[in-house]
Length: 400
Image 1 (cartoon, rainbow, N blue to C red):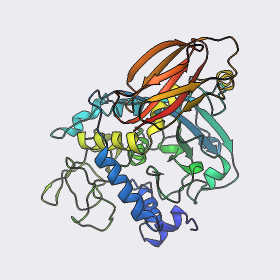
Image 2 (cartoon, rainbow, N blue to C red):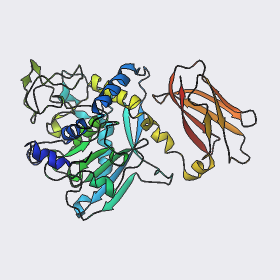
Image 3 (cartoon, rainbow, N blue to C red):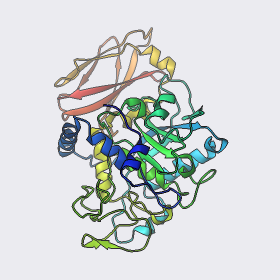
Image 4 (cartoon, helix red, strand yellow):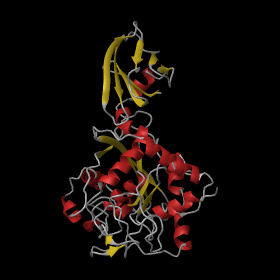
């Protein structure tokens, strides 16, 4: 299926609103594009089935998510500073941990600590030391407003290990957009979040009233499968909703902080998935938290271990490049076979569940055979980390 630019969708829908006047987000256009794919209905059914079957972890573990910021610039102002990037990471870690001072905007609503923390990646996909920031020059105007040109120029780092954010020129029609997890017709090279350079962070080349970093908070919500509170229909209607029980249904977009009632209830203007100005926002709800964590556990499951994998250097990867875990999946006993480890004999085996909680740890010698006994463990997906104090290897394990 041929890709069509977000700009085209905005023009075709007759919904152009200059960014200087109102917040606009390209997610609805992304959804429209995805919905035209022949596998869309299957995608929706499989996702809902996965959500129905997942069990949210009672431990409510804090999950660290490695981030790579791809700065694509034509003009000097678009080549944003490291300080500006760091200011955005700080905003995310306040908003997703309920540490933002403006939770007071959400009086009367549930305010959730999502327990996601974001860190700039310390290693690139090859295992080399990294700042978590890439910079790429371009001669293309509005590069991030037209289809996937940004991803052709600067493809995503492995989206199973990193949250990719492109900061670039998105034109005058949107502030940013994101792709929902596992969406059909979306290549791994473009999977992530796109933000206009002047709406990213709280210092540098930012533009009020979107100067508090909430555009990125909003779009990462979409990245973890949240919809706008009014649903996907941009025509005023109470017939569509975001599917979250504790976000009141509302008729259409809201652009200011004035209290408004629609669909028989007061609209939750403080929600990060609204279109209001940055200083009006203040909360995710408990229902939104559960949806995002379900999306992580079922749709972006390996992302939660990206930070663990980022600890692995290139020499470590080479050492354990032929680590085998088999039979996998199986009902209980897993064999680990290590090659190319020289005289290293003692290894520590750590097993993590899908919430990132350490559920088992054991020290064994290579001569005695590296076995993992999961016969009494619940069925599901686990991650196994094998270390000897200096080198490490991480593998996915499936118990059924």
